[in-house]
Image 1 (cartoon, chains in turn cyan, orange):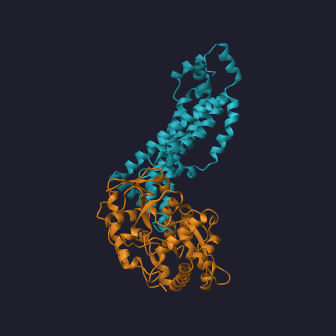
Image 2 (cartoon, rainbow over the protein chains, first blue to last red):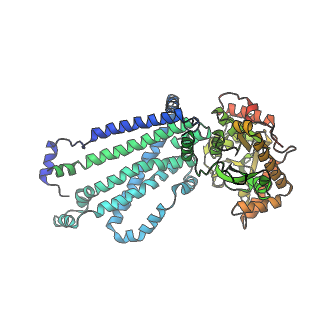
Image 3 (cartoon, each protein chain N blue to C red):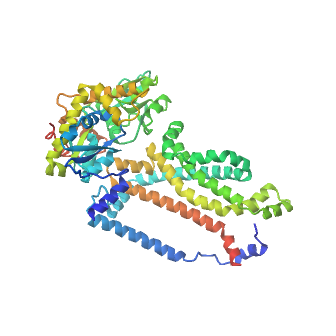
Length: 274
Length: 323
């Protein structure tokens, strides 16, 4: 859409746009993390809360290192990460494909949207046991649960993105006798990208939740299993270790989606600068 | 400050937090009792004791809390609640992590875990499981301990069969043929499966080894500072248990006050569940813990790697307060 030759050629000349305040944000993140750790330490040190309810940061750090050294943490993290990535991929492909079709076909959207919305009212924890019965207790059930939870935000963001294309630009593509594929590649995908990437950022964190829900219900590996194991053994430091790794995983995935968004939409900033 | 932080922590860790011990205006002590499972006829003795006023006669008012077993143990260990229902292995696991919980009333005299296999499978004793796939809800808790104990009792290593974690979908997994056998509760799934026209052979852990099963736990502080409360609680529970054993029909009718869905099609199944459960509660001396059951439990848990070292078992349970 509205990308002039001038703006294209200026891409090479432009200084890579660093977002304003990026360094400050990193500093803030570091300060907030340090503050959280200090507050956590203070609570465990002076409140008298027993360690089996709230372990100290040092106890969690030690448990983290133990699990890292014996290889169990890496093994379980790898399992969950593989389920998350596969679920995210499946959810994105399904959500974007159906979203594109529904955006182009208001009649189909009118027919299907009540069912799609209704499906979102079903708590995923309620159907997770059924999926494990149907698909078996292996990874496929966790991948599907993860995909199901990712599906909706991707679907909605794709529909919104495709619908955001101005009609006059569609007319322009038609007047240029653009093929359907050219319209998709040159107009619709760039127009829908900001919406889709916003949905992807949400979906990337939800994918982690989906995989862990599946592992909670029935699994013998993965970080969700590790949380269950820690609970069952009253090893709260292990529970915290697994939760912190899950948080880190979600943060990394979100950050990757944010970087993808920034790099993909770089041309928009350049256009604004000009 | 301590209480505030503790409560905040518990709100995060424990779903459905309600006030632990509410002061009652007339001197009656309100006690929240974590049950560890959903409302069920398996809790008949407590329902009977509450409905017939046995707790009230002891100056107690019970609030049934259907929280997870591990959460109840933590709350008791933290001193937030005086009592919870828990299985023997939970006491040893908790004490290993320095939770000062003590088992004071052996309600279930036998361990209810069992292995169920389709009637035609030829699985008639634990050694028949070698090389088979066994479904298990999770790799921990009573199911895992019971499974490990049964294999050990028959001289099999823990990896003799392939364990498959299937969540609490044992009945469906057996019927679908996903597993050759499944770890179940003897007083529940086999009855449900039979009612669905899927008869199973049941290998009961209790037929191979005696283990410390479900009962009432408290904490060391309550035992030390308020032993009379423990005695009152156990007296009322024992009366409820005695009444249930004496008249299961009446107990079942009382259960209908506390448990939904006990009428109609489910009634006959739930009556069988209660009848089967009662078999695990009967004893010459109700509420008494067998020392051998605790020794066996510790041995099995050590073999399974769930305990790092032996514990002073006389601190984990006591029969001193059994009426």
